[in-house]
Length: 363
Picture (cartoon, rainbow, N blue to C red):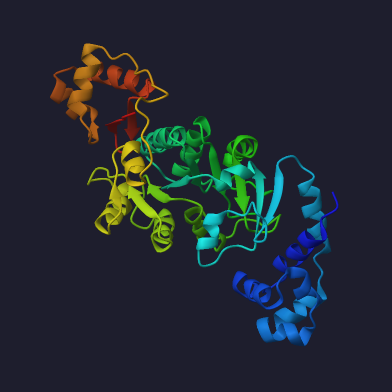
């Protein structure tokens, strides 16, 4: 596909070394359009972006990247959306540093729909993963597209839940839109490209670098009405997304957890700072003033639990405990307790933790 002249101009500017978003928008304000900026003389450009960047603009040299973009646009579901396009997400125009253009793989219409960011730890607990997926499914069915960052752990679970619901899911990437990172999420990325969307502001072929992810986080929060942190340690990167969401005027939500778990210290900190504590998807919808479905559209049948299993689960409670403690609480032998714990683990009702501990899972 031959690139349209105006898109070529946008791409050439965006691919210029040293021309960040602030300087690019300065050029647009001064010249009115990318093609006029490219046609300007070096001295005139220097007044707005400095000598080095002005020289880089005049030198050009983005032919290989333009050819790559042209070939990528020939693929099904590939789009490049610029600030001047009607399809550019209106929500991103409200943030301090909107990207000049977006590479989108998949459903472009999702970027215009009401959305919620759901983020959290890469090293998530089994309960955290269940919470992320079930909240995402319920909120997707309620009309909110689920936005996250394609990371392992909570992000991936959120995407799976969003895709399973009515409103799908969008992943904002810290790489080019043609790169899957981490590689373990390749199948999930393909599902998102087919039924949801992958979005990046970075040029095609851009590999993962640490500096890319905080900038990606501002787009995750910028695309949404609010941000739900499912599980986050005190130093979790997902807290950056929550902070950016608050700075952008978005709602911030957090799911609480056990006071003994380091994986929820970040969530508790957010709640202390004013984030809304949520225990169900209905809490999020109520805060956003969105209608709550009267009946869950997707009831999940519970695994059968006999009387001894029920007694063991009551004895286990909500905090982790070891097998000996559980056996003592429910009056069962060590062998019976071990057998029941194994069955409950296979049924997805209990998970084994480091140190010989077990924890009950809630769906």
